[in-house]
Length: 95
Image (cartoon, rainbow, N blue to C red; front, top):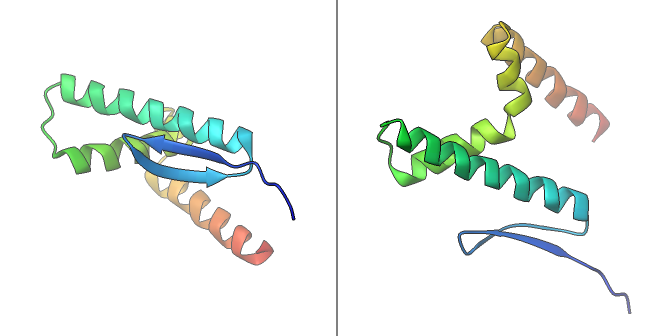
């Protein structure tokens, strides 16, 4: 019999991630906190979105913060998307 430690990340009462990696759980929790802050900021600026759309958008932004930073630094959307495609192909080849 084996004993496994699991880390469960919950957000607004919903289980979002179960992992045995504490670092991964902490990073995911931090990303969800950033997403909540983004959603609050977007709402405070007067942009009206349905709650589900606002949550989806803020999570997308938080998960892709490094890629979005490249866009703010002047990279084109096409180049960022191409980099993502190359990453997916690389992961699939290694998987």
